[in-house]
Length: 225
Length: 214
Image 1 (cartoon, helix red, strand yellow):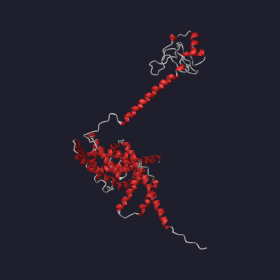
Image 2 (cartoon, helix red, strand yellow; image 1 turned 90 degrees about the horizontal axis):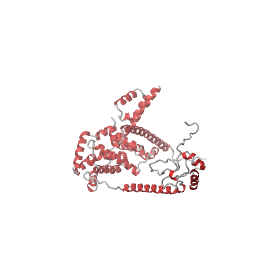
Image 3 (cartoon, chains in turn blue, cyan; image 1 turned 180 degrees about the vertical axis):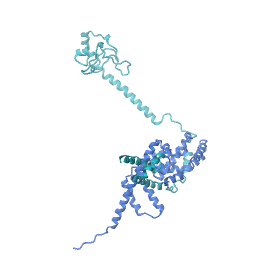
Image 4 (tube, chains in turn orange, yellow; image 1 turned 180 degrees about the horizontal axis):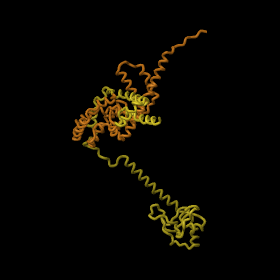
């Protein structure tokens, strides 16, 4: 099983039990209990944060988006459909807000894969044997490559491979058909792989040129006549 | 050989979904069987799996420190202070802001249409040939030459458009009587269709067909 799947499983305990408890809390909220809503927020704040973070790619923005999502949920709680899981609803609101956030701020621009070499120059010199440090670097690279994907592909890929949701759940959250989810997943994984390989090749080329530069003598000897 | 290549193409289109275990059991079995016999497809699968494996690193990323400190409290503060909750749904505005804009646009379009019709009506006044009351028996511009009138009045006048004096002349020559003018309305909203040009229609008219037409 892939690490992503393991993480996803770790984050998703017993679904039916979880759903039942959520529904009880929502009923309490509808009866006027704000404490119940505080419990609901506490239970799902991390989930909402991650969902937003996967799309917007920035922790502070993701926090704002997640908070806004919970406020929207509160406003619309009387329209909650008890036949569905609260998490699906929360994901839908959060992901839609995150996408809106991206569009509104125009922060998400198509990142040029050819510009990868520049950003990686400094990282090369900071490499540390520390496992955590290495992972952080890989995570940073992965995030860069993810940002090269179109928003619609990135959202589906993040929800499937990072959050571990099923295609059916993604279909419910995003409001697109199951077949479209599969197609976007197919395109997203192919594009991710292509861009990842390009980025790796450019990193290797950058390292190679740095090595050659280091081998060159600093000053040419003065030729005697 | 071609069949083999086509099969490889089909399998490769499924590989991105296979790496994430997103295929149904029949597709998965088919792909697995193929991968055991095709080295190039297996390499493709392995590369996809490797690149996807890096996503796992991102999935295990720990929460940024202190990022969710005070999160619930801030949400509850917003909920408690200003945000309307499920117990107090927001009343629907009778005329939202953009409703006025739509109404104003519709009114402007309506006014433009009415004004345009009046100007149009005024412009056609000099071309009127009929003495029938206004709104009835008026004709705009040249008479269509394929109308029944062609063989009677228009052909004789040698023109397609008739003015008042010519009408008088025709009236003298043919004994045409105003009482024989058929009421014709050019208004697009009139229930009756335009059945002539205000002159007596030729009831015996037979449409002329172009040579070769049947």
